[in-house]
Length: 182
Image 1 (cartoon, helix red, strand yellow):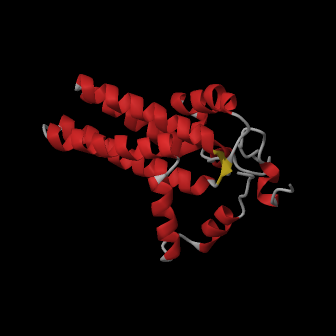
Image 2 (spheres, helix red, strand yellow):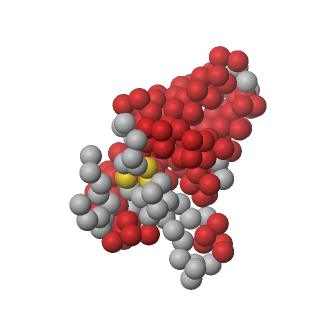
């Protein structure tokens, strides 16, 4: 099956090769498009484990590390995130051939995770633990949907924002050019 030209720059792991003409700053903060769905789901599973551990231990400090992980993944995909690197380079390759999905919705989902995890950390640190741990519960639910059911809530929201015109058409075109055998 011939893959669209959008995938021509992707390597076997689903990472996009960066053209030499891109600036160092742009290369530093690039996000892969497409991404391997198995790596995204594995990363979500790691987030679930970290959040459940933080919740059970009532370790508010761990929420800052979870938020940092999301920030690193928003900034550059898995290349800066230990959880992302573990998922992409160790776990996902053992799950089978890459199943490619659009990158922009996944980055959007990571950004939502960043907002929710940072909110949880701030709330716990500010003395509102019930609200903070409730936000962690929302994060656990969303990451569990991704990890165990293959439903990316952030991607679903991204799609709805595209339909109402809040996501630019150029981003929408980039997402629609990704296809992979399922």
